[in-house]
Image (cartoon, rainbow, N blue to C red; front, side, top):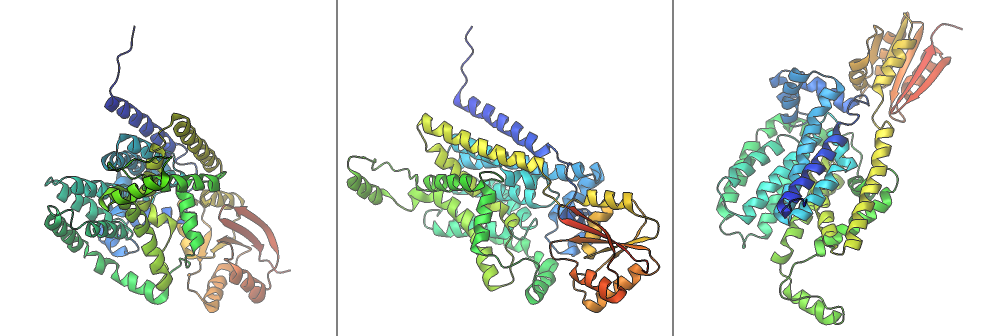
Amino acid sequence: MRLPKISARQAALLLLLLILALGIFLRIYDLGAESLWLDEACSIHESSLSPQEIAECANHPPLYFFILRFWMHLFGTSEVALRSLSAIFGVISILLIYLVGSTLFNRKVGLIAGLLSAISYYHIYYSQEARAYSLLLLLSLLSYLFFIKILQGDRKWYYPAYFLAALLLGYTHIYGLFIIASQVLFFLLFWKKYKAQRVKFAVTAAVAILALLPLVPLMGGRVVSIAQEGFWIAMPHLRDLRFTFSLFAGYGLGTTFILEIFLLLAIIGFLSIETAKSQWNWKEPRQSLSGLVRSISLESIEPGLLLIVWLFFSILIPFILSQFMTPIYLTRYVIGASPAFYLLVARGIGKLNRKWLFYPVLILIILLSSLGLQSYYKNDVKTQWREVADFIEQNSLRNDAIIFCSDLYQVPFDYYYQGEMAEFGIKGDAEEAGVAAVMDNAVYGKDRLWLVLSHENSGASIIRCLADRYNVWKRIMVKYFVGVRVLLYDLSPP
């Protein structure tokens, strides 16, 4: 009995469902295995505030925290409950990158891009973190999907859909504004071509900008403060750009190799220009090249150029601004640009028309990505606050005190800690006198002191204060965790 033949559309749908199933599995697997780190704990704290307080918090645009607040009311504040929201955003992003790829190119490119996103360490990591980055990815894709549809057609409903996506994007993260700006820049490059869309797109973009203006009073004070006093982000260098693309490509064993493969495929994807006027003849390379150059126009490279603008504008502009202003560049902030890279790579893979080349390259990428994911799931990469809290709780005595190198670290510690030990945190901008004042309160009448130090060089002033001010050198133990060092001192006189 013969099985019924399926159409290309049905085959694409089946493959997409398999890719989505893989993406779901990779995003929910071990979702609560690692403890919450500082930023995730801060997400809980900010989302637990009233709506007005969330809006006034102003460290980031408030949309994600409003959504998380509603989510926590429904499902609680466990690691799995918190991170599942980001996992859902991540799964939807796989579908969206497929839609963008198939709309811009064809189903084949869309499916390959969806697969690359599904197995991407970078996308999986932020789909398993209770922060806004997975939502930033989703909305970046959604805004570009409707932007492309506006370019390819002129249906009226595309414009309000694009407006809504851009509005939500801006209220999710400041880097969403770079995504919107890249779309405006691309439209200006092809201003002459899109005569029918000019007025409607200009009006839509202008209304979106006006609707984003409330961000100015919400975050203006924070922006001015950062500009005047500096920020905790270090000045980015060219190696940071390489690190960004390395994370886009993979993680762990073989990262350099897979990055080189991705870059080569991305170049192929960009240079794969569709022309009807000329064909390449290997026997006549000069004549073929001459004919190819004559047949190339700006419109012929438009899809690839759109991805280049999306990718590099959203990365290079904040990088360049960081060189002349307060540094603002972080790899996790540019997650909204990563789909453009995957789409270029997917198009490059799609151009490998020979089966003996196409399938080995695709299998090699899957294998290298799998090695990186195995390392990711096997090893803890987030700060081990759960383990720190459990260790101190099990080994502390009644008359102990605990001091943190920064009061910020009390937030993730207190999420897990069930004990009653007196806690003291040092303000991030505290000078030597401030450190000494906190230390006086911490050690008064206590037998032992726990020091919780995070980051490599933190805690030097505290340890020096113990030695100089209290003549305390008797360290009982030191315990190392991922991202945290715990020390215990005996305060009793010799």
